[in-house]
Image (cartoon, rainbow, N blue to C red; front, side):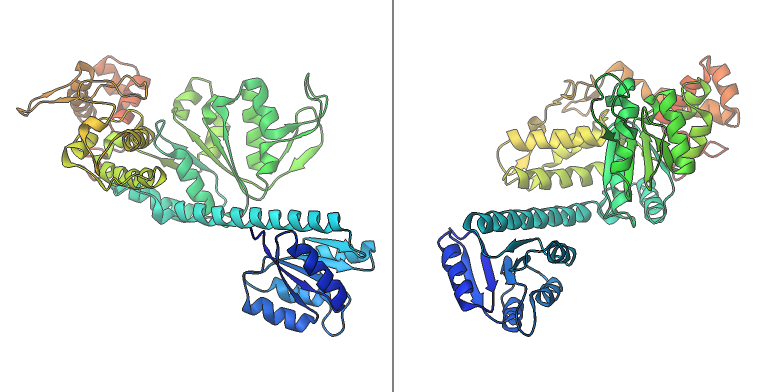
Length: 475
């Protein structure tokens, strides 16, 4: 089996030929040149060469000049330098100018094989990383985000504008609406796209570990801190850090976060030395932070500092027109991943998906499509291929029931769901009657303001204009 194609360049034919024989015996495909100029022409004509093994001291074009010229090729092979002058200076120069490694003469068999294998492995890893990065950039371009709802189109316009800045972004919305995807889209559309994207779920970390995880700690800062640790903020230096579920952050963390946003510096746990960092911060929450401020659970100054650009993602049940687009997208993805031949959902299945309330939002829809693709047979998905058949609970454990669609056209649904429509109308009518004064409406409805606010958010009434009409919607 061919383990890679190597071009050996050495003005000493005996050295070049003996190396070639040795490497061919180790299953490498090897070609030889004794002149750097001819070697460069071969590299231009045969781009599939994986590794260039070149001598440093050669008449005419030397190894360093060949290295420089090789680096400008696309694609360019990985370069290992051969030198009879094993000085630190030549090694440093070789690495600085782009060589992967160097080997001193006389060549030791085990050393040259180890060096070549290590260089080719790093080349393969680099190529795979670049491929994945290109794939990720394609999949996370703003124009690849799916959704035709007018609110989603407005969100995409905002993303395109804010991505080019370093402004702090706060993403709000229910669980499963795609807040992480929006954060990644901002990063990969920004000038920081080549920097790291570090995601931290603040709700998944105990309060005692959150500060250490994000800011790092000094050895001995607490029991178990047996070594210095870099935090997530330093790992995100030059890129973006995404803090999900920010509402659960401790008071101490909130103070440090406020300082980072204002001064771009912080201290590690147990360390008085200040660390500067260049990082963009994107945050997300499924909790009403303004309400948390009123309850004293979140710092007001931090709330105003992170609420620079706010993006609120509507739940999937409020944009049913996006369900067919998303369903088709997930169908194609998971059919390809699982080597299935599904090309569509039949009309009955699509109707079921559109009418289902999706308490788990886009994440639940994606999981439902993936499960159906894995378990179903045939070339199209049908209603019976989904876990939430009529009258059953969704598999995600949310306890939401699906309406029972009867052949005679009657719809039977759970009482809680059936009452949502009238409740929305009552709240909307009351708000309109009191000119959208929430305090007065809450008093007349005999509920507190927080309950009213949450119901307004649930039913999409927060964007109502004074006068009782929602932007882009007629009651």
